[in-house]
Structure formats: structure tokens, C-alpha cells
Image (cartoon, rainbow, N blue to C red; front, side, top):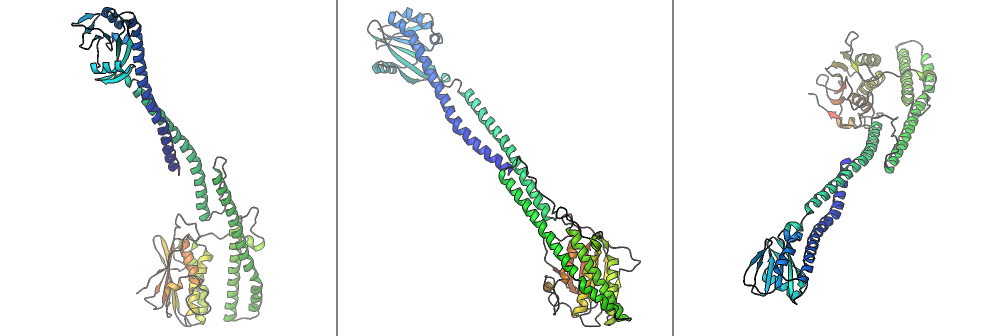
Length: 491
């Protein structure tokens, strides 16, 4: 925009300068021409009194020599009278003509041009080699008509024109330069305001809900209005996000009542493996609900001025957005192992032994646990009892790869399974499980691949978690653009 304004100002200033300076340059040339002919008229008028007094060639020669043009050899006088010879007087030549005119000085005009001036009866200008001749008829005392000839060289017609044109060109360049400087200053104001607005928009898109655009006094009114509209929009977004998170926290908090009933009923089951598993599941469900409430409230804290994080058990410190993937996966597999034993499913966990080195990933432990619960829950919901499954954790140079495989029938439409809301098939599927896994992987810049296991023969889901988050993606956040799911068939 800045250079566009400069170009517009240069074009407009150039056109205006040409519109004024071209006619002015032509006027300067015409003025120089008029000045040269006016000077010739004055030189001719200076010799007029001498012609009225005397017709003596010697006297006229001295009169010519006394004038500026005569001394420079640019003045001649054609007087009536016959002469058959020639003579000199004061350095000027006197020549006779066959037409009754005697010439004193250095003539340039031809006899025809002189006679034409006499016949016209008024001053005329005619072209001669090297310039123009100004011919002025003058009545003399003897009753005849003499002609005063003043030579005007071409240099006199353009005297001072080149200098004037150079000055006008300099003025035009100065005007263009001044317009460029003014346009640059104006463009700086406009571009600066536009860049601040664009930067705030990018920051808001990246998740910085606290960003606002300062309304500078030197900004154009339109950009100030745009900044005010952007700030109002950002405030509205903050209120909507805060309300959404509060709603999520409130809805999750309502689950505590049925959870309390479940806890009481589980406590009344007595002893036994089934009762213990039920109580363990209720405890885990209560922890997950508490984590949802805490996450919704803590991430909404500070969105609105003066807003707190809540009270009671909801005031705990937020969970760090990083964890040991091996430990989180080991914990979830231990949870599901009890149900696997009840259903007669054989299972295996590798790469996440207690003595294994940590596999740190930039994901909250609860989010990674929820993703693994989704994968293992799909196995228990959509495969027959007794179907085996394995969980493998591999450490790469820049990523942690989690493989979840089963010996079930597999997923018929892998592309549809990756689309949110479609599910992996069967009644009771919300279609959010694999979408949760995909969002966790994308939060680290990773990906999810769905294929067929070469060992167990069923579904194999490969989750790649990068150990470092992309520079343009906030840690623990969602990517700005949802890529197409990658599907790979493992042979």
C-alpha cells in the first residue's frame, strides 16, 4: 500500500507539473522571440532621426557606428539614390544598386525583400541565412523612402530559453520529490495502522484472546473504525468462549450427583473382583469429570476482567501440558487390563515398562490418557470378547509412536472412521473417539494412520506424537487447518 500511494502521487504530480510547465516553457520561448524583435525595433528607431536629418552616406555611416547593432555589424540602411561605385566610411561599406537604393552597412536581405518592405509600407520580418531580418521603411527628407535593416541571429531568438527550461525541469523534479516524501509519510501512517490490525488478527487467530488494536490518533478514521470493530469482536469472542467453558464446567458438574449415587451403590456391592472393578471405574469416572471441570474453568480464567477460577476443589493448579507418554499409557493399559481379563482377552504392552526411559511429549497426561481410552474402548466395544490386542510404544529421534493393534475384523471404511461423527461402526458409537486421538496428535504436529495389523490381522492405529510442537502451533492447542486423514494399509 505504501508504494502504491507513492506511485499514485508521482503520477499525479507529474501530470500536474507537465500541465503547467509545458505551456510555461513554450511561453518562455515566445517571450525570448518577442524580446529579440523588440530589440530590433529599438535599434531601427535609433537610426530614424539621422535619416530624417541627412542623406549623406558619411553621416549615416557614423550614425550606424554609434549604435550597438551597427557596431556589431547587424544594422544596414538602404537609402534612395543612384551610385555607380563604392566607398567606405568608418569601416562600413557603401554599395550602389540598380534599383535606385544605396546600401550603407552590412545587408543580409535581398533586393526583392527590401522592395517588398517598401511596397508594404510597414515593418516586416523576413527570413535570411542565419536568422531573420527586420525591415522598417522610413520616410526621408528628400521625399523618398529608406529601409532600415536589423539582423536578428538565431541565437538571439533562443537566448535564455535553455536556462529557463532547466530551471522549470528542476522545479518539476522538486515537486515530484516533495510529493513522494509526503506520500511516504502518509503511507507510513496508513500502513502502520494496517499492520497493527493484521498483526492483532493473526494473534487472535493463534489463540491470543487478550490482543487488542491500539487506536492511534494519527491513524486514518477508517482504520480507527476498523480497529474499534476488531476490539469489539475480540471482546465478543472472549465472552462467548468464557460462556462456553463455563457451560462445559457446569454440565460436567451436574454429573457429580449421579456419580455420588454410583459411588454409594458401588460401596454397597461388598467384596469381590466385580465390585472392586466397579468401584475403581467409578473412581476413574469421577477423576475424569473433575479434570473436565478443572480444565474448562482454568482455561477460561482471566478471559474476562476480574474473573476467577472458581472455588473449592476447582482451584487446583492447572495440569502441565507435557507428560511421560510411557507412564500415561502404562496407567491406562493397567486400567483396561482388568476388563480384558474378565472378557478373556489376551493383551501385551511393550516399550512402556516401568524401567523404560521416559518418552516426553507436549501433551497433558489427561489428554493422552483420554486418547488411549478412546482407542482401547473401541476395541472392547467393537470386537468380540476374547479378541487380543497389543499396545506398543516406540521412541524415534523427534517423535513417540504409539501402535494399538487388535485381532478383530478390522475397519471397513478407514477414511470414514477418521471423520468426526462417523464412528467406527455399530450402534452406540458417537464417532468422536478417533477424532479425539487425531486432535491430540495434531496438537503436537503429529498424525494418525489407520491400517491393518500384519501380526494380529485386525485394525492397527499408529499415533505419531512429535516431541517438539511446531513454531506456528500453540502447545496443547488445535491446528488452524484440519488436514485430511492419512490412511495406510499395513501389509
